[in-house]
Image 1 (cartoon, rainbow, N blue to C red):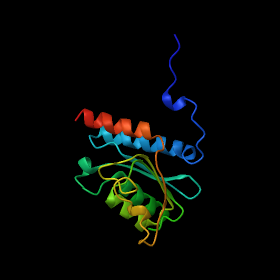
Image 2: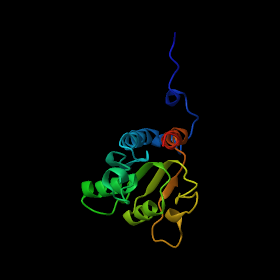
Image 3: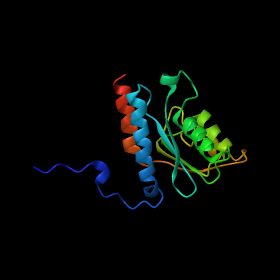
Image 4: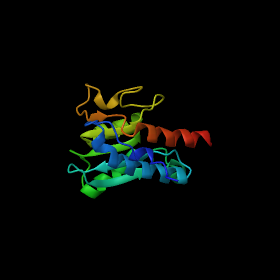
Length: 166
């Protein structure tokens, strides 16, 4: 009997915008799994250097730390800034499994990341195009590129499973 291939192993339609970010999103999904294992909402993030190498990762740690700001994006941004030795993350990309909230979107603008790549949209609290669009607000001095929908189904499935069992 032949085992069915994993959905991620299936040939993907040619998508030159999203496909380059799939490997980094898989790493963010690994981080999301770490959050879920610790009882937190499964959101994971990876910050990539301008050359594409991973600088830092993070996953939600609000329950573990008791810190309301311990979102995956915030933790990954802090760790990336520490790794670089400066707060400006110019040229860097944040890859995250869930569309950033307003707090995280503000931090992305302040950190000067070049790009935000996310998996699942957040219709209730998303601030990168779904509910608000903080990161592309023309009134701000920095507006990163936004690439939505990378491995969207996989990212959404983690969240759905987590909340179904709560």
